[in-house]
Image (tube, rainbow, N blue to C red; front, side):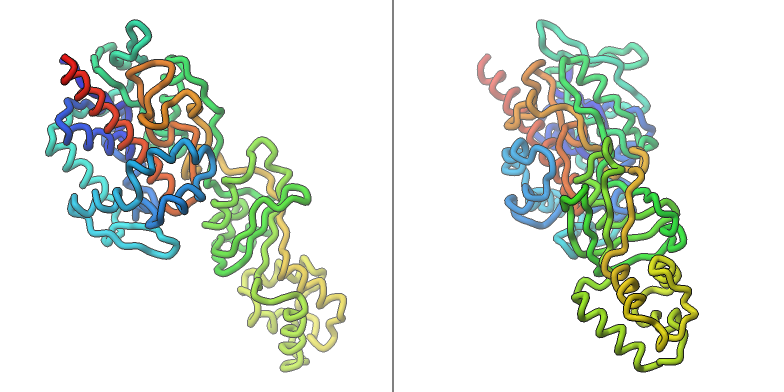
Length: 419
């Protein structure tokens, strides 16, 4: 049997493309090495699935870090509103939270997974699980199908590579798509982690393990240059720092030169240094005979106080009426600019998405078809494009998948009418 489309990879992009192509009457086969479809999608967003961002296309493009212009056509074909409409029409109520993040009302990613599975089943999409692709089949320079690791060959008019990157390898993202793309003559930008926690050289981060900070200002510097500065939430861990601010900052950092970056945390961004000093003086004046460590509880989280005191050269046992101006200044400087030096990114397996991948120079942005090997298409994380946290990366997956499926459908229709 010859298929109209073979989707290599049964993740968000592969299944979204399969569902749309099958609904248009195409004969579709999905091949995936896992024992179930959309494993990564089922755990994304801590199991809640931040499937897109409720914003206009201009805002969407501003939140794409690499190759946003390449995605202009895809986002025009499949906008965040289109994604939301699709899942609502598939029976999934949605809600929009802070920052435009869109989730199922149920807070259950499986609702999104089940909706796509239902649509694929409705239009008779064929699925082969535990089936890895060994190589692409070509004839006269065109992609004509695939050969599985078991030796079975499947013929198709079009093959879509949607295998994902290298993050969360236990969900099936092991980099197989890069190998297949290179077989077809494509250049692969070396994969790096993106949206990844950071390890710090200073060990006192571990002393605050589990401490979640809100409304703090995180500034990242590379030498004297500021590469990121944003207010929000972050988290201390046993190895360093994580949380939304850190994940977003990591997107702008180069893993190859990671030790050149410094993190500065402002615990009180609403206060100027002068206002913070007045705050300290006021707090000290209210209880002049109390120990400094106890007085700071109204200013800082309890687990952070020993770290701040040590950084300022204080023990915490000092009576506040004995604290000198210089000691008070040292304390305030740490409150306004708690400094950590980045020693490493966490392993790529822990990244939310993979930076790098198939270079977009060799892919048609209007169709997602290879410029090198006709009949071969790409979608999702496999491509060298990624965005900030907030639903932008799944939007890339859905939009590129839809664009590929639409182009394959249009190609088949044109061939049908031509002869």
